[in-house]
Each structure stands twice: as structure tokens, then as C-alpha cells.
Length: 115
Image (cartoon, rainbow, N blue to C red; front, side, top):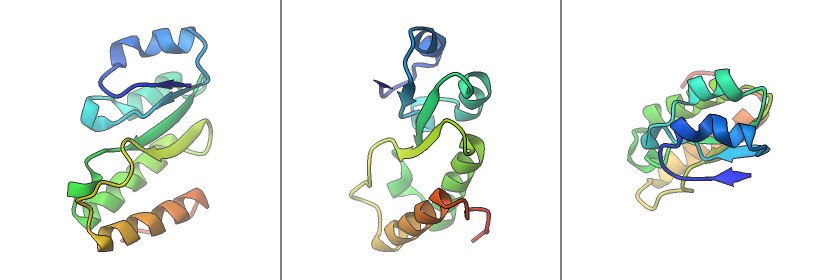
């Protein structure tokens, strides 16, 4: 597994060619284009992450849309849903509970219901 925070878009192909089985955390906040990465490398390597480190600052609706978008892009093959920095301390309890519920549902494939 290769783990790196920051924008490593220009090195991504090198990581795949070097033989890493998984690369993370793929945070849009760092300039990583998850859609592009999934389309170009998603059949060659497992992608882990996608959930931005900025989730603590998002409104509930934006948070759930962000996760739904990541889950939809990541799909069910070679994708491990994960956050880029854990649960931020500034996240409200209400948003944390919504986040936890949505992640639980997403892992079971029931994430298409809108909020």
C-alpha cells in the first residue's frame, strides 16, 4: 500500500507501475481528481479513500452528497471507502451521526436514497 497526503497526480502512474496494490487517501482537498484516477487506474490498483479531510466544515446535505458522489465514483470493485483524516474535531454530533449512518448504508450498497 502506498500512502501519501498531497497532490501526487503527476506520480500516480509511476506508483501503479511500481506495483503498489493500493494507493490512498485520494483527497480532493489535496487536488486529487478521484473520477479521473478511478477511470484511468481503477482496474489496475485498489483505491482507498475519497472522503475529504474537510468534512467537518461541511453542511449535512453537502457532507452526504460528497460521500454519495465518492461511493458512486468508487463503485464496488477495487475501492475501499475511507476518510483522508478521520473524523475532524469540528464536526457536529448531528453531522457525525449522519456520516456514520450513511457510511454504514454505503458499505451495504444502500446509498442511492437521497436526503
